[in-house]
Length: 224
Length: 238
Image 1 (cartoon, each protein chain N blue to C red):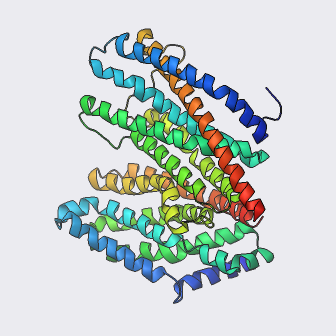
Image 2 (image 1 turned 45 degrees about the vertical axis):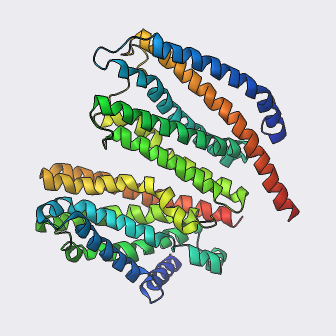
Image 3 (image 1 turned 180 degrees about the vertical axis):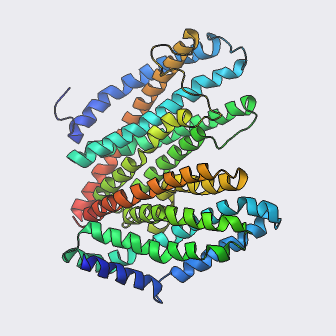
């Protein structure tokens, strides 16, 4: 267990260090949220109605961008071999990788929602619910994405193939995440919002439990 | 059930003998089914002649789901027993399934335009079938993208198994969410809510599509087996 936390710390520190790409992801996120209002038009009412959807879509796009780096470098330079020789199980390794991806790529976005929400004129009373849905839903993105990243390791177009195979699995998260906020904005039903939060939490829980198992099986196939 | 069907050589011999018969059956069934569907079935009293789109739309939707189940099941068998034939069935049937799903989507949207007044709505059934199409495309592209086919087969079958979650969602999407797409009217076996005169051509068309699928599958299987033989040979020579 101690080694697991060491690995988690090392992975997270790597992403936050200078060779990591989390700054790139934040800038990309900012760029999307900057482009969308310019494309849609600056009317404040319309923007604030669709702002939760815009935020969720940009979070998913940013996830696509950062996913391919989870395993790829370690797989190519042999770090993954060294991990395998050590006494961490593959499940622990892939769990640590996914969790550190969530810590370094999704958590900053969740925390910075009040600031980035200004761009898409997110209504003030929606800021906290948006943060809650992102906090509950984004682990599913990280863990499912990590599974996709491990699948695409030895594929020929490893960077481009991840979004294609992962996109259908991201859709339920997007539907329930953005849908919960839309019901809150358009109808004001607290109860429906909370019910959709439960579904979102269920999706995240499923992803957290099963995706590391699947990705550890896949990595085992590579090293057979 | 013959023995050694898991042996690719024996399997290939069997599909060579079956292939022409399946072709003949599919042509006969398709012509009978189309004759029933176009000339010998009643006109709906609300929808008029457009109801005939159903005879293409519904069988191709059923087949799309069936073929995905075939892909997932054969991937599962392949993962457990490691038979090459199972992997090859999954690989060969996926493009056919993608085409049937596309036919379902296109015919459905051209049926929706006169009936619902729109080409497309983000209804639960439509969205989940669209996701099924995406799973097919992802599986096809993904299974072709590996340098090492042996590992590629294993990993893409895991992808196929993960995508199988979508099939029950499609099936029950019209019951869970009350949306624009109508719910099932045939699978209620005790009293289907469809008239016999419409049911016969529908089932005939389904059988015809099923035989077309099997016929195309036998052709594609021969190609995939040859391809696989060539690839393994190239790997061994190297």
